[in-house]
Image (tube, rainbow, N blue to C red; front, side, top):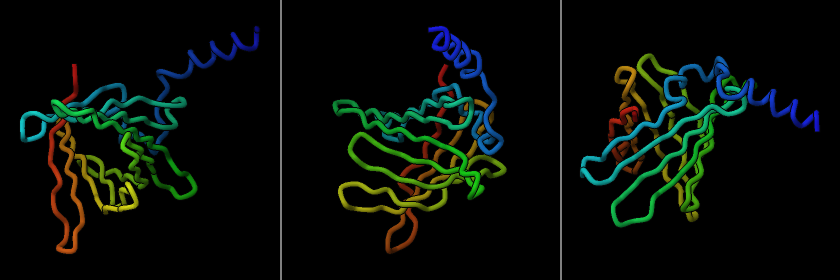
Length: 163
C-alpha cells in the first residue's frame, strides 16, 4: 500500500506541469488549451484540445468536428519524438475507422505536416497540412488533398484559443 501511495504521489508531483521534451517544444503553445474554429458555412465547427502525456514526452490532441443534426466526428492524435529517426511523429485514429501516421516539422511561423496517407474503408487519400500561428491566441489550419490534377485545398480554417 505504501508503494502504491508513493507511486501516486510521484505521478502527481511530476505529471501535469512537466516541461515538454525539446523536440516537442514547437508545439508547446497548443498544450493545455482547446482551439476552436468555424468553417466558412458558419455551421460546422472544429475543436482541438491538447494535453501533455507522460511528463511532456508526448502530446495528445482530441479533435471534434460538430455539424448540427449529425453525430460528432471525433479523432485523437498522439505526437511523440522518434529519437532514432530525429523526427516528431504522430498517429491519428478517428471514430469512423480511419487513421493516418506521419511526421510534423517546425517552421518559422508554425508547423508543417508533410504529405501522408489517410486510410479508411480500404481507400487511401494523400494529404498535407500546415498550421500557421496568428499570435498567441490563434492559428490557421490549411489542409490539402492530392488528386491526379495536383494539390487542392480541402479547407482553411482559423482556430482561436478557447477561454
